Image 1: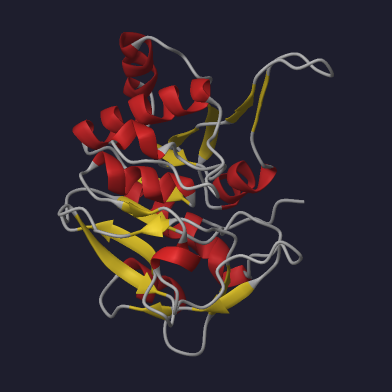
Image 2: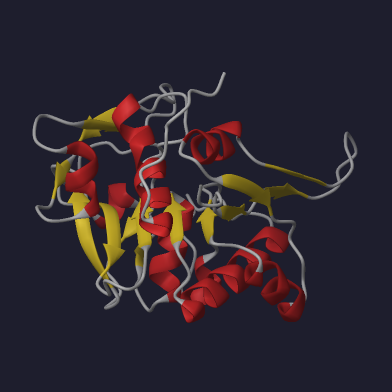
Length: 248
């Protein structure tokens, strides 16, 4: 039996406050999706040293970049929009270092939400900072009163997303106000919302397993089909279709 792949997961981070010490955390859906698909999740702390991170990546077979708050546009030379809510600096410092090393290695990677946006930026793409202003004709992509807000999904033929979803009417969860603008040359679009907003990307290099989704297959609002994205990622790493087990 082939060894299960070790898949690293970055974490969200909260600095120390009056009510709690500094802490790191990750939504269970990320590691549950990996476990159910035949992988072994490995939680990655926000180390600051490049060589320390390199040693960690040497032991892993792939990485999942999780979602969270907004990437700080100032780090890419842009003025922030008032709607931008940047993630903690310690997390973003680590996430950007992690993405740089993953992309440089062409290491298998699945980016979700802000994780997909970070992949695109790392490879030279750009972002819309606030969809309602940058794309005023766009459909709603976030509803503050409905965390399970959903919209349609149009997959591109011949892509990973087509393998996951096949044909038929599709809807995915949506909880973002930033989105991909210019797609990096190393990626291609694999799914869009009906208004054209990029919802999924994948590598143009067949030798690099790199998948990104703007929607969240790990969330409680995800469908059974959405969760298959984790399975597709593990299959791409191992070349073996896993015996999928439900995680309680």
